[in-house]
Amino acid sequence: MHARWLAGWTLRRRLIAGLLALFTLAAAGVGIATTAALRPFLLNRLDQQLTAAGAALSASNTPADNPGDGQGPANGPPDTPVMAGQAVNTFGVCIDRGEVTKTGVLTSYEGNVSPANLSEADLAAISRLRPGQPTSVELSKLGDYQLIATPAGPPGSGGLTVTGLPLSGVESTIRTLELIEVAVFGAALLFIAVAGTGWIRLSLRPLRKVTATAAEVTRMPLASGEVTLPHRVPDADPRTEVGQLGEAFNRMLGHVEEALGERQASEARLRQFIADASHELRTPLSGIRGYTELALRGEATLDPDLRHALSRVDSESARMSSLVDDLLLLARLDAGRPLAHEPVDLTRLAIDVTNDARVAGPQHRWVLDLPDEPVAVTGDEHRLHQVLANLLTNARAHTPAGTTVTVRLIPAGAGESGEVELTVSDDGPGIPAQLQAGVWERFARGDSARSRKAGSTGLGLAIVAAVVAAHHGRVSLASRPGKTTFRIWLPVGGPGNHQSPA
Image (cartoon, rainbow, N blue to C red; front, side, top):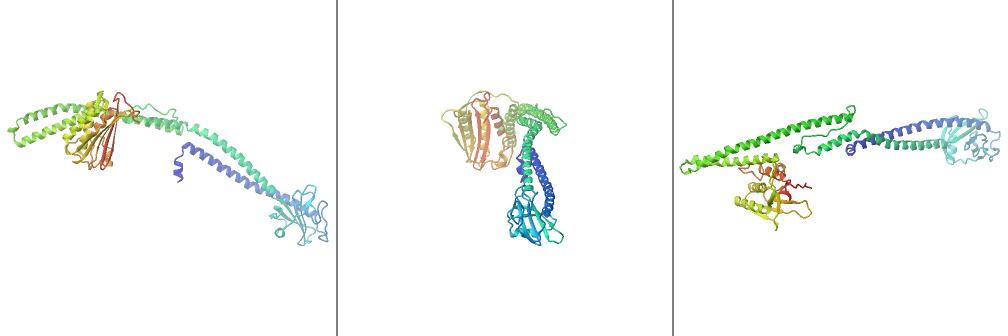
């Protein structure tokens, strides 16, 4: 869970957070250690003061022969101990033969003493004190005190004095230290946050250059034949980790550029081979078809088997001629050969192609959905005719009899992208989802409900995509059982007035 939480943090944020967390832990450790060391030191100092105060109080308050005689200090009421020279808030108790005879608290440096007003619980806690051992006791009226019991009078007389000093001074000193530590460490934490952010930002600047260079490379159209990668990470110092990353990234870009160059050269050679082979095949194919037609003119004198064989030769040579023409067209489009640039009436084109499809596929139902006004674009009429014919042939060949095929033409609306939309849809069985991504590829094959019939070359949709791309248009496919739609968007201005799609 923590890993997923940190996954969305940037490296800079992680470094800053880690730095602040480490400093906070270190500051907390220092504060705890300082407080833990100071408390015993202060208590030891207090115990030393308490021992001296206990000896002085014991010397000043030797038990009288008649305890409880009512005599007290000059500046205090009767039954209070003599506490001259002690610190303010010093607590004193005189005990004679187990009985408390005097109690008091020094309230001023002039020796003024006030009664202590001890409760039964206080007296019980005092009675448990061992001579010479400082003990912390919470007195009900006075608060926390450090107490020490000291023998008074001659040995065996049973005299005892209890002296106490308040612990409030120790606690106040510790609290003051804690407040100072919080203030100092807080200021240091703020300074480290500001200075550390600046330092980390400066240290990661080379890494941002690597990121910026990678982003620029990703925006380059590498799939379109672009093989030049001028972008490199600047100032890649191999002495630093980021510099080593930049140097490795630059080497990788060099390898990618070399691989793209080799791929481009290979594709260029392949296109040239296909163009040359297609061009060279046209002449012998024309000869084969010509001699076959000449031989078939004497059909009446031919043996039936020979006549059937010649018919098959003529049919297959015609199919191969069509395949050669398609390959030659794709090679020319790959080479960037310019298309015709003339007005094309798409409305008339849709009517003509649909009528041809109706004659070729009378078992299908052909529907035209055209606007009232003619729709025209600028482009190559022959190639656009081939695009629509391929789509209708595809619908006829891969759907069963009785399927409805609809050709719809939508003109470009005012204020929109300036694109005409042409759709060919059918209510056939649809194209499986796993085959849809590859329908625009050349020689695409696949077993599906839209079964391929004999005679298909797998180039029809590839030609559609290539011709539409040459017109700076777009194609798309949406298919599910009972509904398959091919969409084509063509810019009104044609190839010479390209408008990038949104």
